[in-house]
Image (cartoon, rainbow, N blue to C red):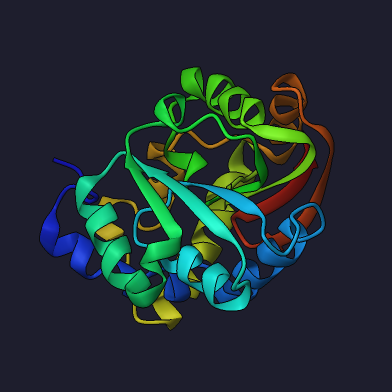
Length: 222
């Protein structure tokens, strides 16, 4: 069982992103603004890794005409998303599973926030390709997650990530490697590799719009 299948851990999920991710609320706001560049006022939006519902609620509150399809492999996280959405849930179609089983769209925009760093490297390209296949030509795709340089610099950046988290009351156990264990266990790519794999998946003009310690965010077009 991983943390996303543990009902007790999932119940506490909403507490952590603002404490772990610098500028978490602004990241959601920037994502919405970037998607709105290609999504009309009544646009249909694909949210990959929708469990928890935090970004879905933020988007739904700000864009009353948008409708959403959310995909996530965790049933517990999708239950939390439904609770988080509250009255906005009627505008969201949630699906349990991976992107290959999501509705085909086509969608006016898509995002994947704080999710791709969990996807195994061997599945990363196919995941991005499946997302692109569901977008209208030219539609914006916004993604953000852990991405750090290779080599010794990666440990330094995760130490900094750990210091930020500790300042917000989230402590990584130094006996198990501290925050460096995150960088060691997750299949993290360097920023250069992230851009390369976006292009291989068929996206064009990937641009960095967000950088905060170990997190990076890009916007690209289908």
